Image 1 (cartoon, helix red, strand yellow):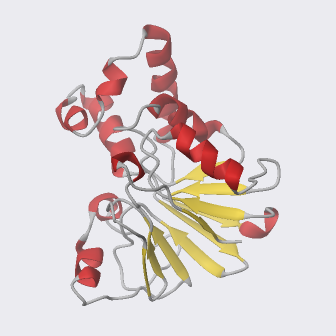
Image 2: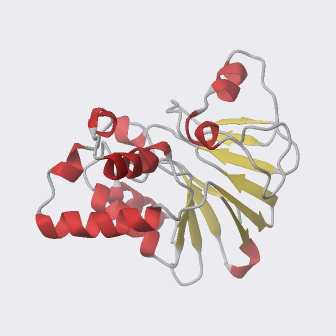
Length: 214
């Protein structure tokens, strides 16, 4: 459930918002930041796939040595659909690209989804800016503790904390210096008491957010 990384192994460490199939946009941003795949690390807050034009290419990112990701609710919807053979929810939320693949590409996707089933739900990484915790939607507790059992559905779907924050009733999380979340599309990123919500709606015509941790 948890993956722990030592950020000092890399020159620069970045976290990226929900990519949702926007592969070329991601590559443009990395080029602009002079990202070096041999020295730098990119961590995704999840939702690599669906809605955008290049979901399969984005799925291939999980095989790259310079890339890590937590699972998002869209990866989980895909895994659940394939396991149950009930595709309705995934199709309603951008999964039609999978059905449109040719046989070879579909076989690639199946292999990559098997790898997705091993993605962590939470990544913690110690960088020069302190201890960073990355999860898709929320860390559903008042204090972060590595390997603490927390509700998996909330990690992927919960918007209650950001909803309270936007209503002026923000609550921080203890136990780490920074928490990085995606899932909720925003006009601009929100930063509050060490919480960072960075899904700025790239696939909906917004921007892709890269935040540098180190």
